[in-house]
Figure 1 (cartoon, helix red, strand yellow):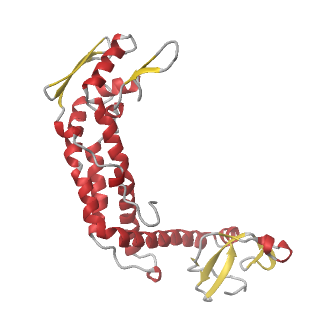
Figure 2 (cartoon, helix red, strand yellow):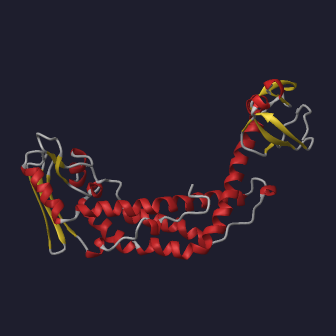
Figure 3 (cartoon, helix red, strand yellow):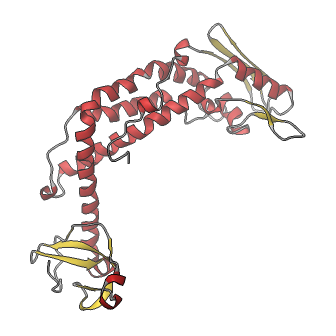
Length: 303
């Protein structure tokens, strides 16, 4: 490592994250001289290791100094360094999870027998602002309940109202998740830190982010499905009827029934009259995997 002044930052490469120097342990508690702007005087507390190709020198430089004096080269180096660190982490993730790729994909695909009929049922309720689901959801966002007037404690509440949300697209989400997990079926392209900012580095970043997002989203989706399908039960409809008859409903009339594997809705609001009939397949209520079964942890933990 050299302490000589750096004058040419062409091709600058960062070799470390920011490092805070314990200056209290230095003689006189002095700060560290900066090879960029102050090689002979104390200057910084937070720095990083960097390689300067122009003179093949490795220097410990002040972070703010580099940004001030070598702005464009330094920021390009930061972008490259973050991409390289990410690529190394993704390569390690692939090595660890690739042997489990088939198992992980099968967990996601297995859920499709639940998400497909569940989304079809939700589709029948509509996704536009004038549709029944949105009218009910926006007038009681996330909560239809009754409180005891004296104790203020909940007498009842309706579960599964996330089913009515316009963002509830479980089958679409699951297909995206399965696609992300299937990335493990293909090896990553060859790349190392000497390869530079190649197409391989970009591919590793994109595919790694897709996989990481899928791993994170799968247990969350399982929880959402478990909650949302509770809406499609006789108990939920009885509570909605109780809520409506109690005078808290925005509907002039509201009748929801679940019979013979179908849900029917007849309702009138100040906006319009609603008439809905949708199949509630028994597959919607198939047993779901536990969160532990769909949480794929790595030795370093999930990012």
